[in-house]
Length: 91
Image: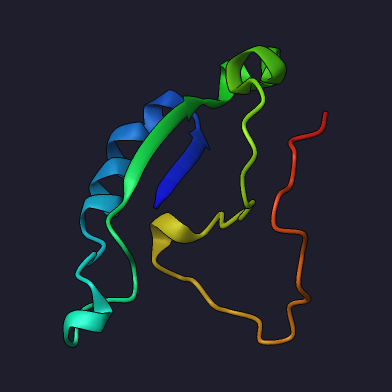
């Protein structure tokens, strides 16, 4: 799985440290986590704000906005509706 993280550059070290702590064992092989191996790509928020088309090109991603992820204060909403698989960044 590839995660494209858009964040201010001064947050990159902390974000990378938190992603390194995610257990990526294969759940099918035992009692490990659900997540597959993770590739983390970091994108500078300032550059995205300046020119998203140039910085991200034709990248197509599933989109998740989780502002509290670094606070480990994540809750899920079982009533969330299905969204299209691909969401393009719009200005």
